[in-house]
Length: 635
Image (tube, rainbow, N blue to C red; front, side, top):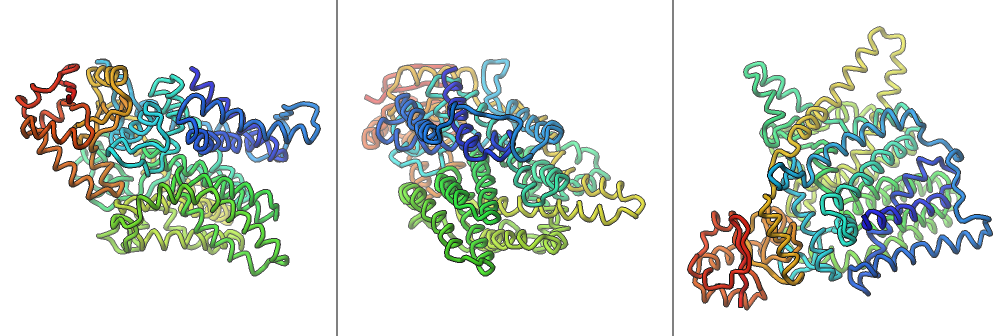
């Protein structure tokens, strides 16, 4: 309960600042920006207190006090009669109640339902289960959440590979660690911030779309296409169903066999809800920050307000360890906007000063993060920054690949771009630069993850295509059947995504991740071992030691360690683990002492995959057993 209270307090602090800064906006806008500010204050603001007091309750209390002081000073200096002067009905209308109830809330509810039946779903036998899209990535995020809260050291250790710093963007997981630290159950420590952030994403996207198009109808359609959307992957299932009806039903039963994830037909453009927001928490948090950053930047260019450039600098400076890809995409788009707008500026000096302030604040805040975490991971690592043309398309003609993956967005991209206003064409310059980089440079071990760059440009393109569709519909007012044609286009644009969402809902709780004995073993480890102890386990990704107990293991799953660029380390350590488990008692003890390993864990995965030497294990101190799992101490 205390964790939820702390989180709500930070959201309230964020809202107070938004209420001061955006007094001319309606309550929806201020709530959106306030939610963004509150989340970012907790994610980024905890860094300095944690460096001093570790990741503790004291750090959070200090941050809460420090974060409210500037607000009090500002209000007192303005000599307001009251600290809290919130007018729900005032301000420029950005979102009306009909749009909120008919669009923003329903899409948010869809996301919340899927999150609820995908994240640590309790099973009848006392275990945990997941849905399709959270079977893999979620366990990694849980590992970071629990280890940060349990070990409390800051900067945190990479608990999937002992002795390494955690360089993966972890701030959003640290947000859940804050709730978990204050006693919130792990499931709700993940779900509650996810509910809030996903709602802010939907609300923020609509507001950004409205500011870009200045048309409510365009913003509505753009929001639907971005969150539901999908390409033409449904056509492959309909075609196959002519010969075999089971082809269509496989959408709801097969593992990653949907119209937005169908590798055998080179369908690689995922649904944003099912494959980006729910399982990929860093992407969710990246969009939380990049959408308001784009709004602030575009509004600053329109209004010339220096305060907008200051605000976007502060927001951008927090982004590297929230989501590095979104930070990079924002930087590229910003560079495009800087030069695209420069030549028409009457007062170039003030214009450049605004950009210098934005850039200076961003660099000042971002560089320590990049230097300590990001560059440490990528410098000299051959898994990063390689030339790779044509993203993940290895089979199809270039244009056809994007038509069948992006669907109507690609089909109508050219007329939408031509139809765009001068200002929006300038915005597209930066988006084009993002696409060029994503199409030519592999930024991480898994080339597929370049989509995290592409999505930032894609969201702008979706908005402009939606705006063109509205204009085209208006131009066809004298044409009979235009309503039927519009419905057909919208169905074609959303059917693949809708089917994928249906599949994800059906898969909720389908895949067991942890048994009741796994949970009991994790509870024992939390209660009876040093939080900083190192454990020897197998490399199965469903690992209760690191995921639920928050302990550091010698080497984790290749799904994470290998694809985080630690390819050599993973290869070496995974081979060592195989030899040590099956080797002699003397080798086991020597290896554990050499690597500061205090405990050896043997669960069903270790027994099946590593064939441990039982006579060697029997000479260790057996400290606890649960079901088929046993924990040994190395003396």
